[in-house]
Length: 213
Image: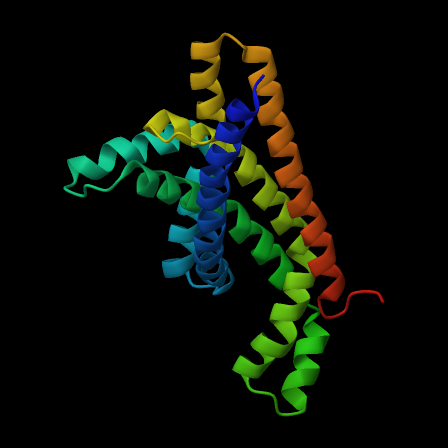
């Protein structure tokens, strides 16, 4: 396989990383909202969050992407394919991240919260200084794992016409008749990207409050 073909795969991997990173960040913001709704104890908030999470965890991501891609024009929203793909990935990862965060917040020791209240901390201070650091520390490995899963799942966005890494490998394989070399190279690029994410996750985790020194 020529260097030129490998360069094309690398260029396509930029789309893979960009779509994944944007989707993960948007999904995290949505997940914070969803976890707050789940922990509110109010049926008005809990039930919609449960329905959202059940749907996006229960339906295959491929179906979700195709549904969103075809639904948006029907309701009068015309967006580029990449936007539809990011919406699909964001909503999917938000459902999983919300469950991770909910578990983290629920694991914060009640006695620690009560002690903070006794010394005069406000609910906002308790949330920012106690609940968030502990929950993030507890859930960070799961959040990194979810990021890796989304990076790999981003290969499915090719169904809505986006030429990311997997789609580029398919297109090149069809024109060069070098499927083994191209897909092996694509797999190697995925491996390197995910290794970097996992390694960065370990470094960040070791710097979080409460991490062993």
